[in-house]
Length: 328
Ligand code: F6P
Image 1 (cartoon, rainbow, N blue to C red):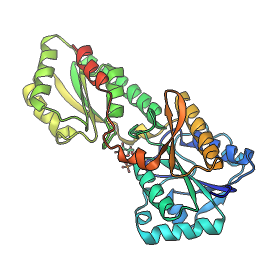
Image 2 (image 1 turned 180 degrees about the vertical axis):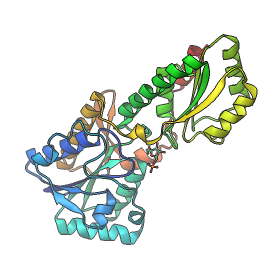
Image 3 (image 1 turned 90 degrees about the vertical axis):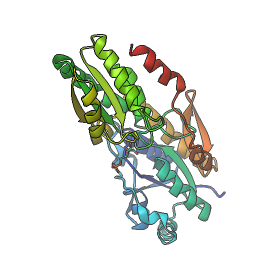
């Protein structure tokens, strides 16, 4: 692989708090090493539509504390086609970009891997930026910590009113395919039950468990339901449970996209900085088709193909078991 001289950076897929500190680190690490940097707007869409601009050290001033992404983001369907990838490649070549840093989740990496396999003269390094914490090769993804803290803050407030009224709340959190936020938030907020996409829910068992809570004189209860849970949607679920669990008035709260916003936590600012810095150093070292991850507090590189193929990525079994014990 020839020496890198110009890097393009983009954010793609769902935004995540920590993306801005990460962009800042990419830009400044590249400039520090004498490379040029180009910001690509709206992920792969900007590559296809040639929406890019040169970035300087001051382009990323005062963004450490900002949620969202200054580069904007999109889920880009045309990049899945050969024509879309070819148009993106022509624009990247015309800009003189020879290395890409792509910040996003598994959809972003699928596109990146295909692109770099077709056009191996463009080196690509991925950074796991998603609140879902569902990528093999990194214990934490960027944005997960902040999003979980946002959820905890919201559920603590729900708990106050639930307790005042002796109510049972079903709270939906994000995670189409991942129960990571639900599990962490459930432990942190003392949830009575946590419903996850990774685990099927026996409604009868849930009802039995909630009735047992009634008889143990619990004044309020919280059930956390991850968006991707397969038991038929939070409203129908709450209705079905209300028929059987009659001592509590049941309410539903859907937290939605507020979970993706807000200032990044200290953890995500440091993680974003570390990952951005490591991604540029990896490109300089001649690496490509790899993802930067954090394992045992050390940065490590995992082939994108491996990060994507481990769909059996599991939630920690000990945490799942612990929830049952701690909610007696
Ligand atoms: O991938 C992150 C995520 O927030 C998922 O948890 C959620 O299911 C999805 O994005 C929502 O995506 P959109 O903002 O496109 O509706």
